Length: 412
Image 1 (cartoon, one colour):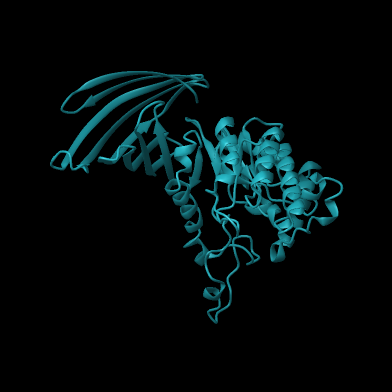
Image 2: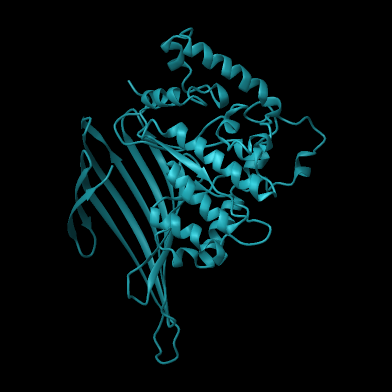
């Protein structure tokens, strides 16, 4: 019986734990000697021991029961499927996950360099390796890596990563020394991702260490990190890891990149229970559009009984007209339970409540209109039915103007 049942599960943050010869194997022949050795510091012994354990599993020296018993407790290189693609697929079977984003962990440190040939040659090797790790199982989504230092070569790297089969692209949260990620020279990068409908991703730690090293020099013994070596992320680092991705997204919004490329998708996961979303919409030919954001937090996620409850705070602002400011703020609560009728059919009744505050301000001197502030609330009761890839839904809204909505969609 899988660990997770009763709903569709997408794992948005998994990693390959690289071994010492992994990246070099995928590099072009003329670059292999220039790829730096994988330095693991105090965690290197853990990796060596994990490789020996994997060899023992392949030789049949470890029982399936022992693998399943350690599935949820072994981490890093010791995790089942950490660096072996076939084991990763079996791990997904045991976990019950439908999709999984797969990032690398330490490989970029082997080629991040001021030399563009090494930088983008290593990028090619990285993305080739990630795509091959995931190629055998369509549940695995390879996340390619593209540095933005050289705009022309960055665009070429995106094309290569997509051709290899990468399903998402990670970029560093910190900008290059010479230009912003919002510079027009990088427009071809964002255009390619928009046209391919492939999401741009950011990752905590992808902007280096924003915490100054001197904060660790406290006259006390240094704690080890979660891998046991102490060379990576410690508890103090976690307090500020979110800053570089937040600054990156803010600059992309303020400099109009999402307005120029309205189909560009960006994912920035905060934690296993919290997600942040941004969007921009504009109808063709209209002189206005809407930009918005939301923070959603999972309050309950009972995988055994298939209960779920979440809260969301949202913000929407209209852009375009020079004479009007219009904004809407909202808070939503929703609870649902999913019942599995078969492998391909589920029923999910739900109930929820939402409140909103809309605010408008006329900025033109041609007329004199008072500001308007309108608050409201509504409750909803509905059911969603999933039949393979077909979604059917009915929802009744209780508000000043009551409504009944029927919904039909495609997707899982």
